[in-house]
Image (cartoon, rainbow, N blue to C red; front, side, top):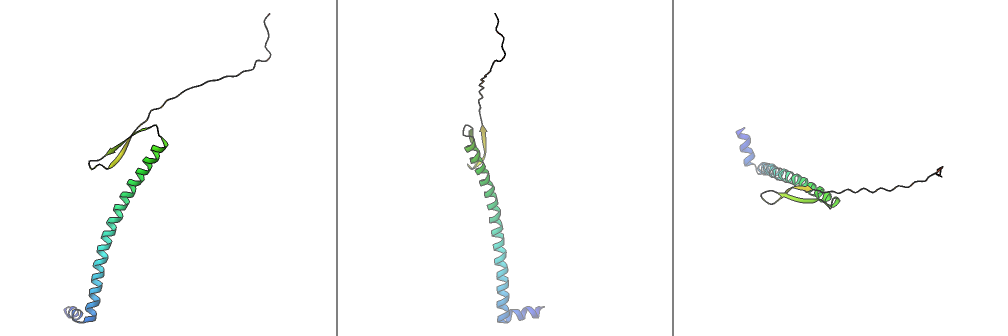
Length: 105
């Protein structure tokens, strides 16, 4: 085994190929770790944006609702406090027709 390693390190073509393979493996590993972390961050940010869009749609659908934004210690929005009031009204109307009525003398 020691002779094989010696031959690889002393042979210019073999040492170049070995260097390229080792460098490529290190580069691939570093890139994979970076993009995995970036993908996870993007998923978290996308989830927050989805929640923010749903909150905006709710506020547009319910303009009479009072909305207060909850924030964390860094000032980032983490939720909404929604309070709503309502009112109700009732109206009645009737119509009728009298048929076959007897008149009193």
